[in-house]
Figure 1 (cartoon, rainbow, N blue to C red):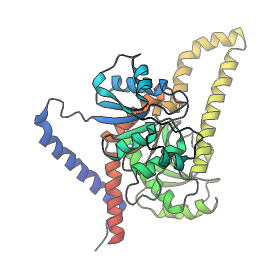
Figure 2 (figure 1 turned 180 degrees about the vertical axis):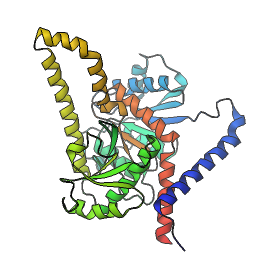
Figure 3 (figure 1 turned 90 degrees about the vertical axis):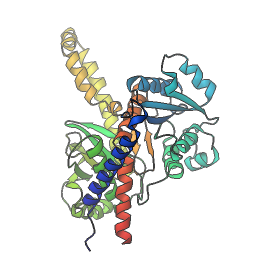
Figure 4 (figure 1 turned 45 degrees about the vertical axis):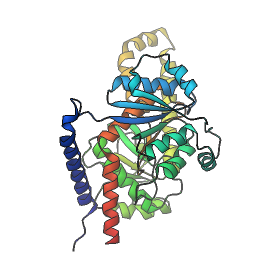
Length: 376
């Protein structure tokens, strides 16, 4: 008996999910006029990040004002959050507070912090996702604690070896998914293959890119180049019939949009991400300095300002939200520690899109099919 391929399993899982969703909609349509609107419950760590609680609360308010289907649960010290919320006018029924007495600081050992500080804003929020009382969790706090909490508290989808962090990065043609950028420094070839598959699912269903191009980061385009990990992974990706593998991609070709899913282990991915951000900030700074050097350049600056502003905006990574941790039983999104309200709002909207496209359910069905095939 022929076992189904990963692609066949994907479409089977997707259409099964669509059928279940439509069935639920038909059963529930008499419950009210808004039965078509799917509510999304997002937990926001109000105590995480350099500008907490000011920016997380501000971002939460902006999100509920932007999308009526979004409901936000703020975790942290109630009296502090209430004081911040008092600054804004917002629908009171769509933002609630769940008190958490403790805060995990950036410098704390992640595993110890998650295990010992059970009443922290991160741990409390992730348990809400684990229990199904929320759909997603967003934090600007300790990256290590978010990564550890995602695996220990929310839990991995059965069959997923290592959940990766996967932010969208701007390119000449739009965006690309950088996977992994911080979760798995010591990855194995099988992990990178799963990253490629999960990344393809994400880009296809969230961004609507049919047959997304997958590339592995390397020091050259030749197949024989690379370190041991890349050399072992390359043939596995090449032989995988379920992804559109285009081969190796050099770092300089990523901004040009050489591929849609950029696969690498976390050490390389984090270097790429930080260099991306640093070069972008420096380039903008130098352009501004250049435009202010003379009267002529200042006049020119006034003329090109609208076009320049629009161009620079396309390379602002914060507009795409945070980095989702793929492969968990619920969505966990990590934003920059220095995230302002706009990035946090976009991360919340990103969670809404993720939920509405049923990404977690599709991945769960995919890996269930894969596990069944392996056991059979």
